[in-house]
Length: 338
Image (cartoon, rainbow, N blue to C red):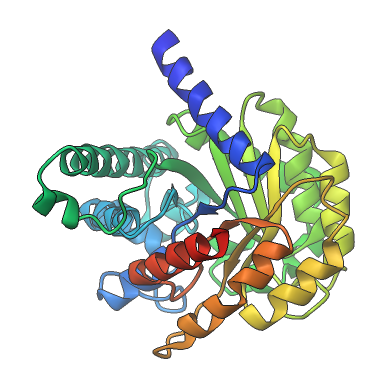
């Protein structure tokens, strides 16, 4: 146990250092849409479990995808648990609660195995022949980290309410907290201690989550809102006010960064500008929404220098962001740092 805690302590020192410095951490991309491209899963409109079905039936495919994002430059990968919930597995797959918990926790194991396999291969090639080194996409890597994907409550409903957040109007803060507390604990018990709380459409839900973070001392988190405009969350609150609220409620030692996920690139700059000065010194995290059209992602990477200048220190992609796109992002970040 002492060894494990020591490893986690070193990981958190690295992650906290990234948050406090000008270093930029590259995240992964769109797990769900990449699995759709491969014909392995279907959009929630056709399968309520979406990527969660892959964890149940084809876990090896999820591990291979993690490996692809790692190969092409991700410093942090997320568990494939955005759509995975106890309620969802019980309702849409007929699992018992115990089996549902086991499947979700296995997602952490899958990500852990992917990182370990990548790192062994990377180190052997770095220490190997010139030909082996040339097989690597990048040769300046640190061992990647894992974040547990914690989606908004609306994700499990599989009715696109994760993009309006209207469910919060009929739920109490305590109900939201109970749901999130359960799923956070499941992934923490699987050995993941960094949370990617993502695509939160409503200020009320974000506040409910950060209020329970102190129940898990030592845990670090990022939190991203979703937006469909230049100033507001998907639930139509002021993005700047929502950011200010959750940052005042939380410790910067626990909530490391705040920002945007699954949001169109053209909205990112005005949203970040509106919230400058509201983060309590925290950096921004951004996972823009990609596009399925060829060449579109390359266009939005041209906005990266602007976002970095606005304080983005964690950058990846959401839907339609492929492993090869992560390579472009990493190269753009490196170029900007020169």
